[in-house]
Length: 492
Figure 1: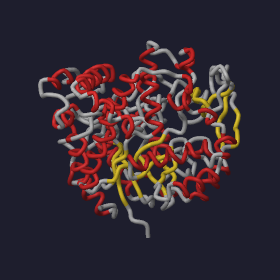
Figure 2: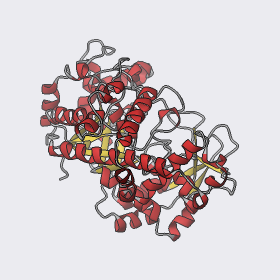
Figure 3: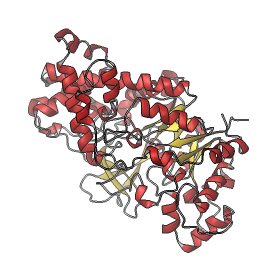
């Protein structure tokens, strides 16, 4: 029998704190103890990569680099890099309910510049050699982007070609210092989180951003024309989230070339992820069975076509290179026999979303009585509405079906807050499912509505901003969740 567990989904950016965005360090460790006190054993986060356009962690300028916004001013101060007076500039006096990426980016970089300026010349040079080759490339990429006024790398002239590039050494060393601070602070934070009895589930976006260090230094890994244009781009076909599909615009992989290298780039990526997390979720897993390819001139993803992905050969290579890899497959979206077969062949746990299960007269794979043991069950992901928001937006037929299925005993189904009765009924139904792991976004734990949603797919601006506050976390009924985990045998 597989051990039954439960987890909470909350990104680092959403943690409480005084710096405009969630940070590593004390607040993260406190959150781990908070969820452990209720019997949870897993904490799922979003990708730790640097964010891209629209502050999106799934359109990152580096698949290997770390998000410098998560670097803790307090830890920098404790380590002697900056003074208590220095970190005052990072204190945020705006709303505690939203992450302010612009403020956090500006003040965090300014603080890191001060810390770096205080190092000896030998100290400044000491960080770069210790970094992974891919992260070193990201440091060079950032220095060059700065040199060229933030322009996309295809506009850098000779610097657009990795082998010809000539970045400023001191700026490369500055960004190496920043990356070193990221990885060091997270390693120390994660050690304390693990000591609290919590394992961290990380997230790997399947694709990289077109203007990224990965494409710039990746050579033949990606299907990119000589002038750096893209004949075809990545996306997703029309589905639950979008009737036109989702046109992501990411470069596609050259799977034939990758196969000739034993999928070396992907193996390195999984290895790097397993050094950050205890478990990794591969986003858009179905794209590794077959992927949606869209002509680069299209304005929507509606007219794309399926292309064959690497399939089991990729994961056989990963198994040899990173035998300790613990992987969850995000197998949502447009399905096919190839995806089902690949999931079976790998043995990875897939995902089930209870919101998708309540179409009347449809015995869906997302309705809890159909969940296999080897699956991870969610009330919703970062792309879903909150449970309360979904109840309001669902059709009357869907809502009635959901409430009856989840044994809602009456009252106001639209009531929100930590004791929202309809939300409580749905969560408890999910917890009774057969899935070995059940995961709850903090927004649903708090009974929040649509305005607390993390992301709306296809909406480029204003996303990824939700933050929890300590005031809200303090009113969570811990006894209720501890009891729910205990009686459903998810207590660890």
